[in-house]
Amino acid sequence: MKRFNWKLWLGLLISAVFVYLTLRGLRLKELGDVLKEANYWWLIPGVAVYFMGVWARAWRWHYLLRPLKSIPTRTMFPIVAIGYMGNNIYPARAGEVLRAVVLKRREGVPISASLATIIVERVFDGVVMLGFVFVNLPELAKLTADSGFVGSIRTLALVGAAAFIGALLVFLLAAMFPERAERIVTALTNRFVPESLRLPRKAEPLLLRARVIDLSQRFLGGLESLRSPQDALMVFVTSVVIWLLETGKYWFVMHAFPFEVSFFALMLMNGIVNLSTTLPSAPGYVGTFDAPGIALLVAYNVPRATAAAYTLVLHAALWFPITLLGAYYMLREGIHWRADMAKLRNESEA
Image (cartoon, rainbow, N blue to C red; front, side, top):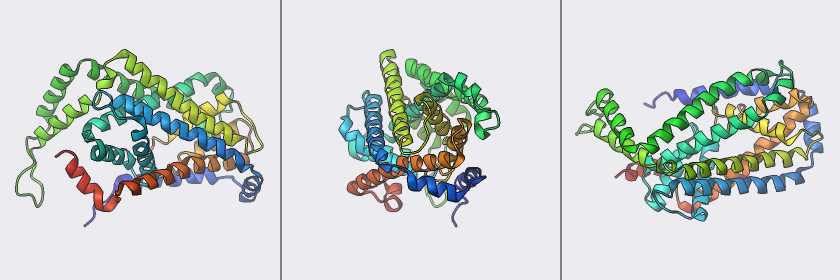
């Protein structure tokens, strides 16, 4: 009997709520008219700038992995594309595990260590996105308070800042004091994790405590790139470049539609919609990307149909190119999700 996947159903429920908020008050005829009149040639430079950002992500990951193994950025790029494809079509951000598995398969980097670098990426992304919001707080204060998600975004930003900056500090401390971090993790594991666990249909019990300690040591090894202040600063700088390039895509796609807001407004939109996509949702961030983006543009006095058309086209332009490219690379790798993932996970820590 299959287990009830509550995370999947929670994501679907949250996406359904956000889709309702997206469609509420929207006149579909007006939306269709705006979509018909859009100049889609602007998507070409937008997609090009976005792929520059994906290349920058591969370079940043190369930089984070360098203490474990120096892997050229051109080798990392297909793996990053596979990961983002996985995030777009599989639930629960399974693409992060997928790219760690592919990296293990191709380069022999332990999954737990590469997952540590991926989590560091996400923390730096969160810090930069919150930076985009905080830089634009004076502009945000000018917007109407009845604009849906926008009215309470300052509270969300403060909560998010505490979470992301707190996580970043923990990682930095663990990287700077690895022996002490290892002792703390070992002590907590010995206190709270049982020594063994008997699994159904397994003759021998799983040595759970030893397994957790081994994985945590590999995970801490993945934080090694943060031991140097210069390296940590470089990761932050590349993160800023990545998100500025993605905002550049927002700017190019905007020119396909009959409205104009400042680049800073688009930075704010980028920060808000990506913070919203950290919520559980259906694959592809359905609804959680669209509803807050439309709400922000409406707060800038963009007509609702125009704001919806722009946000939906932007979402599609962010989703389809990287998903198709990632699917191509995944097929070239010869990986089939259902058949191979369990086997690859078992091989990964052997």
